[in-house]
Length: 139
Image 1: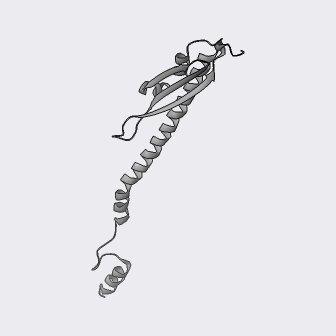
Image 2: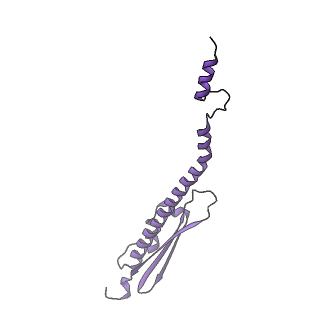
Image 3: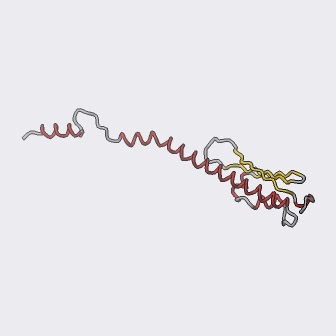
């Protein structure tokens, strides 16, 4: 008995023979595609952090304006605005600006945390205006 029929069968099935084997090709293609997948995932996380920081800035601006415009509020607008944001967002950077006469406008900026290396500073800024109860406009 000869081994010739087995070689022909193996060649047809792609096992050895005269052809190069394609084993491991999918793994190599996946490794080439992996950096792109990681970049897309990091961009999605970064956009989520930016949306969260913008939400936190809006909440802080509303809390600060409500306190600054109220007659019987406790604390200052700035302290209540700081209390309204998460500590890890506030630690990155927090600015508070208040202006107005009959209407109080509070603007809060918070720094967006970055997970993408080399990305510059992003700031989320939100403003809120509320009527000042102390201005004598009927309150």
